[in-house]
Length: 135
Image (tube, rainbow, N blue to C red):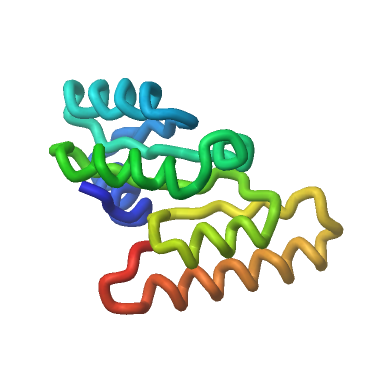
């Protein structure tokens, strides 16, 4: 089942356990992560990097995670990890596939970092507030 990072982390904090995150860039890695999470009855975070998206494509990775999450009996999160390109992070949010994103504006000057981060947070919150929306 595909779920939000917030819900998974709240349960983990209450239960005193960690939630593993694995970078995926193809079907085989995602299948192995899903199988291990299911066997261990552990929630899991499927993370994609900008490199993975450049390699496999956002839609393909989303399709893989979406398909695996429909047969899994554990909570699964689809996360964009360390998105340095604000346009890509915005695209991930607008896609509706991702249940979590991380903007990494650390290479920017502080004020610009804060400005970019606030913009992404506002977009994510607006998306999250729509009925039936992920993220």
